[in-house]
Image 1 (tube, rainbow, N blue to C red):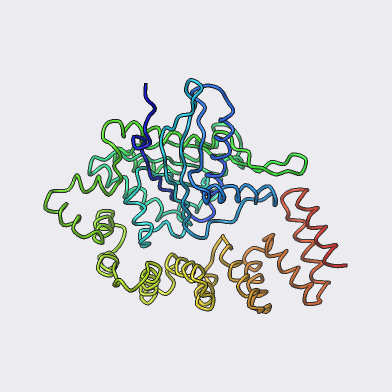
Image 2 (image 1 turned 45 degrees about the vertical axis):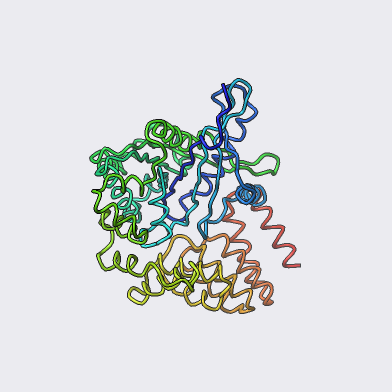
Amino acid sequence: MSRRSQSDIPVFNLLSIGHRGVGKTVFLAGSYTELLANRQKEGSQSWWLECRDSQGKENIEGILEYVARTGQYPPPTMKITDFNFALKHRQRQEEKTSCYFRWWDVPGESCNLQNPDFQKMVLSSHGCCVFFNGKALVHNPRYLETIEELIKQIVAIASLVNQHGLDYPFALIFTQCDLLEPGPISQLQIEANLQPLLARLDAVNAKYQRFYSAIPIVSNQGQYRLKAVGASAPIVWLLSELNKTHQFQGQIPLESGLKRSMPANKRSSVASSRKFVPLLLMSSLGLLGVSAALFFAVNGAFGPAQTPEQQLTQQYERILEKDPRNFAALTNLADLYIQQKQLDKAIPVLEKIVEQPTKSFDLHFILADIYAAKGDKNREETVYDRVLAQQADNFDALIKKAVLRVERGDEATAKTLFAKAENVAPTEDLKAQVRSLAQRALK
């Protein structure tokens, strides 16, 4: 039998949805390392992932190196990052490629249909990984309130898929399950608390599977690593389902499926103007008001003289004129300014972001880093104080403020802050590192 040609190998786009800090990046890195170990195993059931480009491999290895060096999970993703993989297996002592797939690692605040980039990813996707914090589902009674918009998006996409008779699988992934009591009781609690979503998915005949993810950091003789067991199951399941569909109807992303199922007169009008596809999606999903949908459709093009970044910047600026506290627009605008090295413009945007209550302080520390780079130690310290006012045991803020206090000659306060940081450090190794840092700083 002749070797399968590269042109015959399907290519899939996997969408990932989940709030900031839920663990999407850790999941991808854990799945990669778990599957990579399979390459040394015998048998056709040994699957593994292989990066298709050097940048993707460098990004994955950077995540693993961060864990190995710090013993901590990496900070949440700040910008959309592409990863291109090949899913491979061994058959009769020969390595074979089952499919290629593209994974978009998307910041939580960008998972919003007001974001034009996210709209395009939804339309281009073949399947979806949806992330929930399993620990929060069990222990935080108000967690469902914080993911209400996420649930609306999932149900809306599933309804649209069902309405148009499309094949689009969802992998529901519950992270941080290693922090729950082992056994079936925790799983039952998760499913009971997420029943409003599961019932609505069942009502629209959605194709979905539930997965319980546990990717703890373990230490062996001072060396840290991700210990992923069964973490890769969602990716393998999704790609297996997509491969089955591909055998019968080829590779059909959501946008193409919608066009095929539309009447001919509507299909031609959509095909003639690509910028109206987001309007079709948003109108069908019913998540945004008519004015917001028209805004993106009508103002989708600003003329050939502007770059895509400039176009997006204007879109977010116009949103903020009407809604100055729109968190998604603020975050994406700050990200664009930082990418363009316009730090003076990023600062007031980040300042508006940190004024809002949050449980994730990554953007606070980015603002503090910018202040530090500009030599503004007073404002840098103000950021750490703001974090500690909301979360008195925040390890990063305690350490950074302690170091800053040493630089400013206040060793007494620094000593107190180092002691608090050592007390809240999650591992003995990290406690020892804090003591060592304090000793060096306070000499």
